[in-house]
Length: 383
Image (cartoon, rainbow, N blue to C red; front, side, top):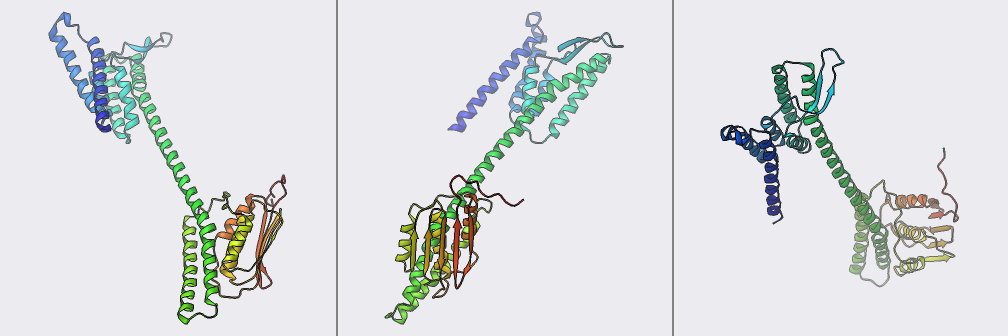
């Protein structure tokens, strides 16, 4: 339906354009009161040529330029501007940008040629042919210098300038489309990064806790061999799911995106309690809760659950310090090393102006984040 309305509107526009050009062509032709024969021969031919030009002008504007040029009553003695150059040797009154009654149609179709035609060679070929015709007109008129000036300025003002304006408009439109596509692409990348962070922060943590529960169940006394086997398979499946999640997150994560993301809406105490429910042995020392505390504790507990199952964990949270320390593992690790969670956390801490240290501590592992006091500037890089 929209296509039909658009087609009807285009037909109306084309008819109105032809009518306007027909009036201009008739006004510049023979007077019908002096005889219908010359009027029909000249004006009728022009109207037919203009009708063809309007029909082909929408898909092929270069062809329309050529047809309107053929129909135009050219006269190099009529110009947009007149300048007396008699003070120069061999010069007289010179017309700049010769005009014709059909010049508005030439401006329009030259502009459309620059805006719609992607390849330049059709316009160049048409321009060369029209320029050759202009040279013939100048030579036929005597070849004076003022005629050459009129012809050249006419070519530039009537054809070249509108064509270049249309080309510039087309390139601006392409640039806007590319900029919009780039903005949409960046939005998709940011959304993928947000999803990747959310998957790593929440789903990865939950999978690690499932693996801890399965490992504890596997070591529980009183289970039949079949039940022990099932618990072991559950632990392995959770570890495999964690590894696949890490690979997916690696594909989705934008390596250049370090924007801090909001943590899940639970407190550190609730996070620790949920980890305890899964079977982890955690000691919590809570004396404050800075903005990054939840994310740091979540990353520390997740790593402890994956790489040091069964180890006691001590969580310390103060206003300017967050640390997660685990002891020696009591079971097999449920995931391989090499994830990106610690890298993302390090970048987030850096953007907040803090420092992160992570590494072995005795038989266990320590993750510590120190945050700046309120009002302090983030530390500048060396150099």
